[in-house]
Length: 116
Image (cartoon, rainbow, N blue to C red):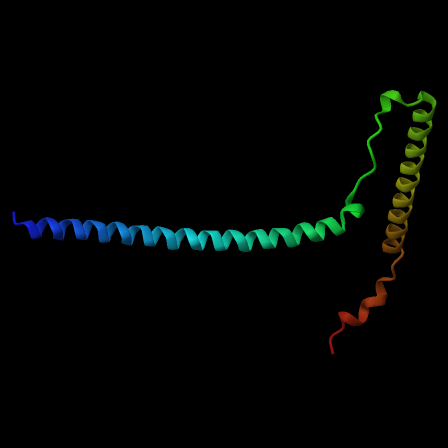
Protein backbone atom coordinates (compact mmCIF):
# COMPACT_ATOMS: atom_id res chain seq x y z
CA UNK A 1 0.00 0.00 0.00
CA UNK A 2 1.31 3.39 -0.87
CA UNK A 3 1.97 5.94 1.83
CA UNK A 4 -0.81 8.29 0.71
CA UNK A 5 -3.47 5.56 1.32
CA UNK A 6 -2.54 5.58 5.01
CA UNK A 7 -2.84 9.33 5.03
CA UNK A 8 -6.25 9.09 3.39
CA UNK A 9 -7.47 6.43 5.84
CA UNK A 10 -6.33 8.38 8.88
CA UNK A 11 -7.72 11.66 7.60
CA UNK A 12 -11.14 10.00 6.99
CA UNK A 13 -11.03 8.50 10.49
CA UNK A 14 -10.09 11.85 12.08
CA UNK A 15 -12.77 13.70 10.10
CA UNK A 16 -15.33 11.06 11.11
CA UNK A 17 -14.30 11.44 14.75
CA UNK A 18 -14.58 15.24 14.52
CA UNK A 19 -17.99 14.93 12.85
CA UNK A 20 -19.18 12.54 15.54
CA UNK A 21 -17.90 14.85 18.30
CA UNK A 22 -19.60 17.84 16.65
CA UNK A 23 -22.89 15.90 16.41
CA UNK A 24 -22.77 14.87 20.08
CA UNK A 25 -21.79 18.42 21.12
CA UNK A 26 -24.82 19.81 19.26
CA UNK A 27 -27.07 17.12 20.77
CA UNK A 28 -25.75 17.87 24.28
CA UNK A 29 -26.18 21.63 23.74
CA UNK A 30 -29.84 21.15 22.77
CA UNK A 31 -30.40 18.99 25.87
CA UNK A 32 -28.79 21.63 28.13
CA UNK A 33 -30.92 24.39 26.60
CA UNK A 34 -34.08 22.31 27.11
CA UNK A 35 -33.05 21.56 30.71
CA UNK A 36 -32.49 25.29 31.30
CA UNK A 37 -35.94 26.07 29.92
CA UNK A 38 -37.48 23.42 32.18
CA UNK A 39 -35.55 24.78 35.17
CA UNK A 40 -36.90 28.28 34.47
CA UNK A 41 -40.45 26.88 34.35
CA UNK A 42 -39.81 25.02 37.59
CA UNK A 43 -38.54 28.18 39.27
CA UNK A 44 -41.66 30.05 38.17
CA UNK A 45 -43.87 27.30 39.59
CA UNK A 46 -41.97 27.21 42.88
CA UNK A 47 -42.33 30.99 43.13
CA UNK A 48 -46.10 30.68 42.78
CA UNK A 49 -46.17 27.86 45.33
CA UNK A 50 -43.98 29.89 47.67
CA UNK A 51 -46.45 32.77 47.56
CA UNK A 52 -49.32 30.45 48.43
CA UNK A 53 -47.44 28.27 50.91
CA UNK A 54 -49.07 29.85 53.96
CA UNK A 55 -52.51 29.13 52.49
CA UNK A 56 -51.58 25.51 51.84
CA UNK A 57 -50.12 24.82 55.26
CA UNK A 58 -52.08 22.51 57.52
CA UNK A 59 -52.58 22.64 61.23
CA UNK A 60 -49.89 20.88 63.22
CA UNK A 61 -50.72 17.32 64.18
CA UNK A 62 -51.57 16.76 67.84
CA UNK A 63 -51.77 13.07 68.72
CA UNK A 64 -54.82 12.03 70.70
CA UNK A 65 -52.70 9.85 72.97
CA UNK A 66 -51.67 12.85 75.06
CA UNK A 67 -55.09 14.57 75.11
CA UNK A 68 -57.58 14.53 77.96
CA UNK A 69 -60.12 11.70 77.73
CA UNK A 70 -63.07 13.90 78.68
CA UNK A 71 -62.12 16.45 76.02
CA UNK A 72 -61.86 13.72 73.36
CA UNK A 73 -65.24 12.33 74.40
CA UNK A 74 -66.78 15.80 74.15
CA UNK A 75 -65.28 16.39 70.68
CA UNK A 76 -66.55 13.02 69.48
CA UNK A 77 -70.06 13.65 70.79
CA UNK A 78 -70.05 17.09 69.06
CA UNK A 79 -69.01 15.48 65.76
CA UNK A 80 -71.69 12.81 66.11
CA UNK A 81 -74.32 15.46 66.84
CA UNK A 82 -73.22 17.51 63.79
CA UNK A 83 -73.41 14.40 61.61
CA UNK A 84 -76.87 13.57 62.97
CA UNK A 85 -78.10 17.11 62.21
CA UNK A 86 -76.70 16.94 58.67
CA UNK A 87 -78.22 13.50 58.15
CA UNK A 88 -81.61 14.75 59.36
CA UNK A 89 -81.40 17.78 57.05
CA UNK A 90 -80.69 15.51 54.07
CA UNK A 91 -83.57 13.24 55.08
CA UNK A 92 -85.95 16.21 55.36
CA UNK A 93 -84.90 17.49 51.95
CA UNK A 94 -85.47 14.04 50.46
CA UNK A 95 -88.94 13.81 52.01
CA UNK A 96 -89.80 17.30 50.72
CA UNK A 97 -88.76 16.34 47.17
CA UNK A 98 -90.76 13.12 47.44
CA UNK A 99 -93.88 14.99 48.58
CA UNK A 100 -93.55 17.36 45.65
CA UNK A 101 -93.44 14.40 43.27
CA UNK A 102 -96.42 12.67 44.88
CA UNK A 103 -98.55 15.81 45.08
CA UNK A 104 -97.78 17.00 41.55
CA UNK A 105 -100.82 17.87 39.46
CA UNK A 106 -100.95 15.48 36.48
CA UNK A 107 -102.97 17.98 34.43
CA UNK A 108 -100.28 20.59 34.81
CA UNK A 109 -98.43 19.31 31.74
CA UNK A 110 -101.45 18.14 29.76
CA UNK A 111 -100.82 20.78 27.10
CA UNK A 112 -97.66 18.94 26.12
CA UNK A 113 -99.49 15.80 24.99
CA UNK A 114 -102.42 17.50 23.22
CA UNK A 115 -102.44 17.27 19.46
CA UNK A 116 -102.85 20.51 17.59
